[in-house]
Image (tube, rainbow over all chains, first blue to last red; front, top):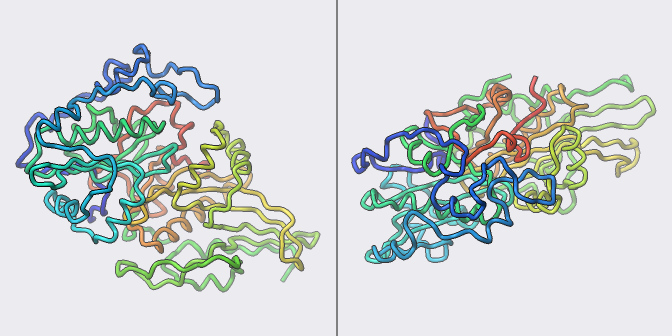
Length: 227
Length: 229
């Protein structure tokens, strides 16, 4: 079955993998010490995630709540300044994003080339996205976006890093910033679809596969059973 | 026709390949300002289909007192958030802040609803309209859509309404040329969605969640469909 467009997240060309990236670490246990660095310094006194903070509504409080985010500190693995010193600029919207650039990176990592108008429409209707520009070539070199209702749920799609720029932490950089932005909006139900080879990339970021037996499913017209 | 007989339209809906023959059996109510116009079908569409009307009558029943009872599917997003809250109460889901629910519905690409409508045969309007089912999809309007919050009133479960709801939602999404339709299913309902044409872990692709917790299963509304039998 053809992989549906956009179904996969991170795409890295195997020849440029560093072996460590493919190591599948253990699944994160749900204590604050295992949280990614950028989430640890929230000032929530390192409590167990299941302990809720004060919230007036009966809505279950996650570890990251609206109240806590005011003390959200900029503890990313690689800071914006560090990226800038290496010649990379982080963008938080699609204002100066060239869809043709994005398309060419998609092709380089093995996605099918997509119609430009559809990319423009998708970007217009994507509430959260991060992309990194290489100042020397003025081209997009890393990208990630998240769709959803912008209130409760988010799904991350199209996490790509130009193969020539892989291995520098750019994939992690876009993912951390995307997650940070979603959490700041109060969205904690964050999901994605991962190809088998990149589960190890997402686990250290805090993702777990099939939690409680929940399965990701995709509609396939060819497989539809006749009643 | 026996006045108390029930017209079962559901059997005609199961095979989307059958085309629109069954439409002749339904009365569809086009709102005056609605436009069923979708984008022109893409070349990947398997059959040429007429645009879907906003509302489709799934079941119609004539009651002994002469009133007509219908179950109507609509994809126009006309859902009252208080009705939705009552429905969520019915299925036992914890409440969420109403302003957030309203915003989430507004930000959804498509909100499909099932309403139970009671009306007298000679009038145009209706006497009673009750929300008995809901499903919604978020999307980037171009490539991907994800289905969330599928629920059916327990009093109306077991009739195939959940199936009809999701099937119609899928058809509406396909007509809007969204090629990739996804969802996350609790273990108990994976088979339900398989029967509707969904595949779990296609090519080994896994659904992953960020720090999921058991409580979140209900509060953040995975696609948990109580209709599953």
